[in-house]
Image (tube, rainbow, N blue to C red; front, side):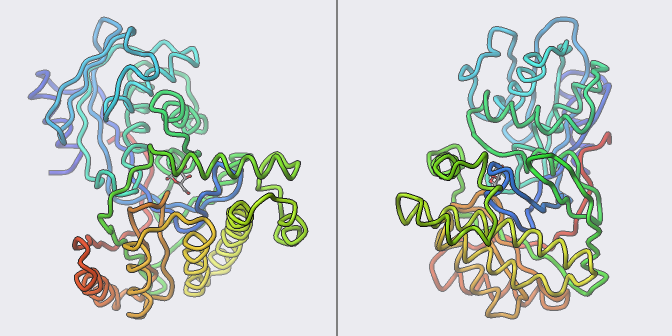
Length: 382
Ligand code: GLA
């Protein structure tokens, strides 16, 4: 059964009758451009085929009931619970969307919702953004709300920042909302200009192998917030609105103005990573996807050495994939666990996956989960 069919059947058995609307939004991997979004920089994510589906219908009162296939729980909340900090766990992502819509002045209809998902939870593939964006689309549809698609990522981000309490950037919600099949999304996180870059990897004999390291990934913790704060403080020291405003040419003169070595490395990561995104876009646009591998690998090295957000499982997966013949590999997402992506020849993907599995077994790590993913579609009615 598809994930949308599972949401529908869950809806019918929980509430009786068919849902009025059904929406789904995807997980994502980021091809390159990590920890650049909250620095007003560039990112290049693509949507996964894995989706979260929400089936929903109106109710007559301002109350919301959500059933989750994953936990089997059915949770209700009303206007009184719509205060940041009142709700925790998965339902806070749903309530956060209702809260963000109401805070922006929208008349959010009361609703019953059923949620089903194919996106591995806690793997750094943005299952939370997918949930937020699928719920947001379903509520907009149900209530006939006038919320242009281009404005939806910022609203979903607000739910996560201010209701859930995770200070993420805008990449994941943008990917879940705006991505198109066969394309990577080139997003300028300052202007929010979004360009769809055609990315026919299979046509070039290439594949992106996603390696879920299964290493615990918890972003709602201090490390992510600490990186963000350090970047913002560094921009302030340099008298810049954001680190996006520092170019690679200006970097050597700027670094000595920063107080400590750790801050210098954080800044160097962001500046060089923005450059790598632009270089990747240039290669993809020129029809040379087979040449982006070294940029991916350089991104990983920068995230490992300068930004310090990798863990042994991520480094081991990258090293094993490269040793087995991947053209490039890097961690994707926030780090501290989660997934690695490797650019491989289509025919080499199974061999590379096996090499990573062997390396994990030799290191005593939990076996990874691997799959090949092609750029897929963003949020849509199902
Ligand atoms: C998480 C956040 C994003 C982004 C990435 C790192 O996925 O949700 O906003 O900052 O980490 O690139």
